[in-house]
Length: 436
Image 1 (cartoon, one colour):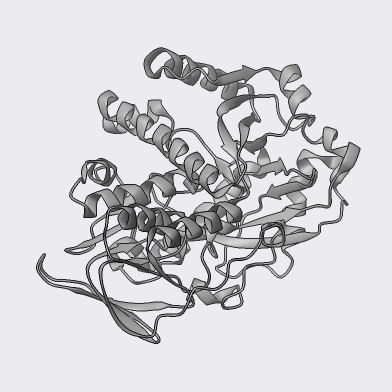
Image 2 (image 1 turned 30 degrees about the vertical axis):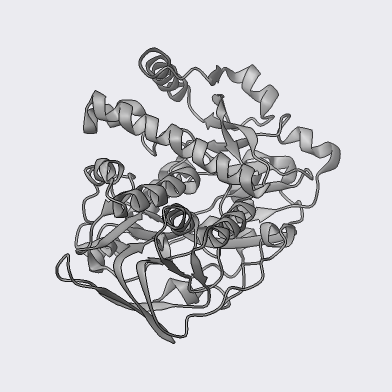
């Protein structure tokens, strides 16, 4: 099944609130015939656009191919949270990579936030500060306290406040949580506005962007001196370097990536402006995510609309009634909103790895891939594009540090990853429902 075309109309953004709030770009042309380029990028989301910007600014001849429209995939339809750190906390990273490498990874994540905010600022897209992490069990507060002490003592990061029950409920008026933490250094943004802003920046930097240009095959180079041929329905690109930036929509273009990166679906709804009721949801204009395995996440936008994501899915197909899928977790957190009308409901495909760390890999000579951001990709995917651009330019230290992190193949590889994920998602969803 090709997820590029399974759940969406070709060339149309999903029916999201974001798509209604942004001014669409004039379409970029489709690829026709043969082109030659220094670098061909597959995918027009944060990763691909960031790579295109950095490479074009460095003087490379860059061609970017997007099967639909720029920002069509997860980059244009996610929760918009610009989180701190990597997907795993620093204590876990220290155990996996050692203390010195964990510090480097933390600093990279800080660079990722700065880079993302810089692109947003250049594109005129507002970023709002503050992301809360909501805890369901007292032991999660204790673990967070230890983590914050480590961050403050060894990493110099003191922008997170730990909040007990009453203080947290003053911020997030819900009985579902016993406390939480508020990261003032994290932020949130309209994700599609950011992606389209980056597309304009890439175009202005001299990158050649092609939309409606579905890559269905890549003949990878066999040696460093060979060329790679990237084939679309209507043309091809012959290049010295290829960057794979399709994330959950990459399909089977690289078996090495597909064995390690699993696409999964997630779903979001939006309400009309809540007016005075907004204070019953959040008393500050922050974003939130909780500690469920099938995470719930939400925020209020500038008009006071609630944008809420959640609900698991064990099929590559979107459910017929996305709104009903998301309404259940929303009602568990805010019972008074159980029957609130939704103005929008949409789904999207992200990608996870076994370790929940992104998969940086060289699938072939002259080929680079970064994907599997596991729900933490707004900033990290943007940095990944820069790191791959740097590697093409001869400075591969950032890419190499990320590629050294463990991202093992799913058991059974590409063929068995899906049934095993279905079983695992069912198990963890049951634990979430039981409050374990």
